[in-house]
Image 1 (cartoon, rainbow, N blue to C red):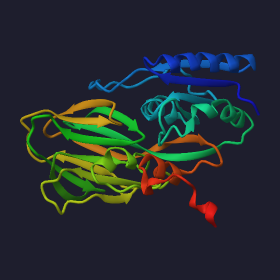
Image 2 (image 1 turned 180 degrees about the vertical axis):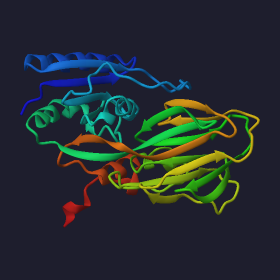
Image 3 (image 1 turned 180 degrees about the horizontal axis):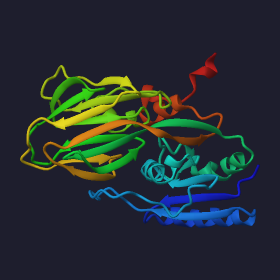
Image 4 (image 1 turned 90 degrees about the vertical axis):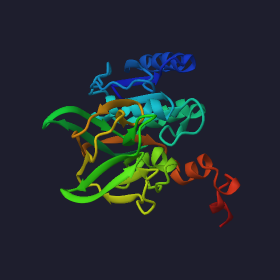
Amino acid sequence: MPPESVGIIYKHSYEPAKIEAQKLGAWFEERGINVFSEEMEAKESLYEYREEASDIPKNVDWVVVLGGDGTLLGAARRVGRYGVPIMGVNLGGLGFLTGIPFSHLYSAIEMMINGRLEVESRVMLETKVLRDDEEVCHFQVLNDVVINKGTLARIIDLDVSINKEFLTTFRADGLIISTPTGSTAYNLAAGGPILYPTMETLILTPICPFTLTNRPIIIPDTSIVDIRMGKESEETVVLTFDGQVGFDLYYRDRVVICKSEEKIKLLKPPDHSYFNILRTKLMWGGTTYNKNEDH
């Protein structure tokens, strides 16, 4: 059944994305489909917490994202958390989340209208910051939550408990709490493992730990992670969400992280291969051909 309404979210200050969003909107409207468009503002330099809202209604049938993985992460926080299926179209290089190349945009749209795209559910994280037992920050993310020291700060001490049971004190430059989807982001750069994105687990990865035996740990997605700063830091410690939005942490703040009740729904073609994306994106083996063709 054709959709009645569609949202289009496109990359901020990127003229090709804006032009294609207008063309796609006109294409939908010619077919009697209501269109809601929104430009996704860049958040790379924004370190100020605020609850994100979208101009796109929560009850649209689908959302098409034109941009890259960063644009899709913003869309996930704004509208995807309401269960709206998202189709990510990459206007640049290959993306882990925006797996549909721009050259396949309209063929993928036709497949979406005909119900031939598969829906893949991804775990999200919900984070609360408690200050003097009062909630001062609440956010949902698709990739990761990161506690990081300031540029000139010394190593920070982070006391971590899982389900109220003390795990350890990480003495490190910071700590990454990642979903399987986010395992190929900062977690990977910090030496963490790659997880298949539909798994329902969480990853804790210390950043440059002082104790070399502090290694990444994978825990069930039913876990509640409670983090406190073990010592007062002379510099600002920042909590970042998907690497795009940030919040300053203070001594005695509690960061509580758990699996969100909501999941992100990503639309993908039936022939979409995560392993092929890994081979291509990470340049494994120096070749991109499909070895299954040899058998």
